[in-house]
Length: 164
Length: 164
DNA sequence: TATTGTTATACTCTATAACTATA
DNA sequence: TATAGTTATAGAGTATAACAATA
Image (cartoon, rainbow over all chains, first blue to last red; front, side, top):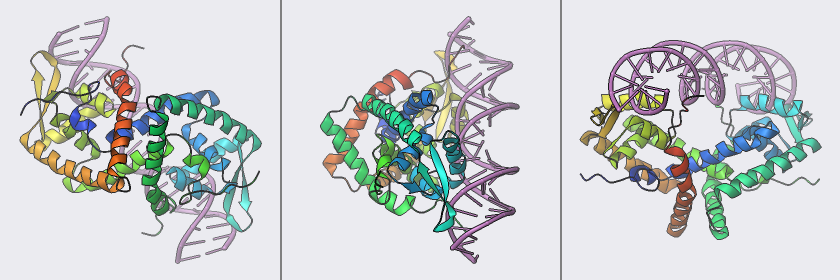
């Protein structure tokens, strides 16, 4: 069989054509860049995402946040600890269900989230710079539609399985 | 401040609107589904990706493959070991540079790759099913253009830094 | 002196299990 | 009996360091 040559900067055609491969790597790349961009704020991407979720949600339980961020619920403990120690969010017991922690963003948290969001928008603008405004809209809309069944069917359920 | 409500299956708006968040999770989701789909073949996604790269490349060195797959070069050792033990690829010394292993896919490897690729295409069709043919083309083309500078500037260089 | 591939080891991250308190 | 949260620990996965062969 004739030897096909790699395409576009050396990525082999057989790899570049795998559905979702480039998309997954694109997501990974954005995350790496954002991780670096947030370093001056002393935040990991996941801290930022917690703040982002809280910024539009009043209060959330740790289980709910774990579902949105696709993280194990046990990881939320330390994550919320970090933010609470810096005064960026606060835990209170849910009076309607005293097992639950109602996590709420503070004013300081909102300010930090505003700055982090600005950095995230910068990274986004850089990475997706090669696209036209229309293309960006199309891609965002398409991904959103693709993920709609995922968020409704998968993520809302707690990931930890109980009883085995 | 008024409490905005989550949108679309419960994903908070502040999270859903972070550039790249849904895209990254979409990539993660595809990978999970593909991981499950490949289980009957006894392959991890990364094994499949090695075969995919080799299928269009004649021979590749382990360093090159590590660059394409964004994996540490030390991980390629075990990965190629796995495939070689199953007779899906073979290592030979590069006569022009005897430090390098020229890795080549075998006929059995091509057959397994063909089956794995079919499964991957199925998963891709399911995940991106909500999109029209045109939208799929637009998304794929856009991601490809976005990633072009990445593959030329980043991935081709070995990731391991030498000298510090 | 630098690079490819290899191995062993250390480290990081995540999931598992067990517990408390609530329901 | 089941769930939210917590903690400690075990396990998986990855990177680091050191080495041999080659350039």
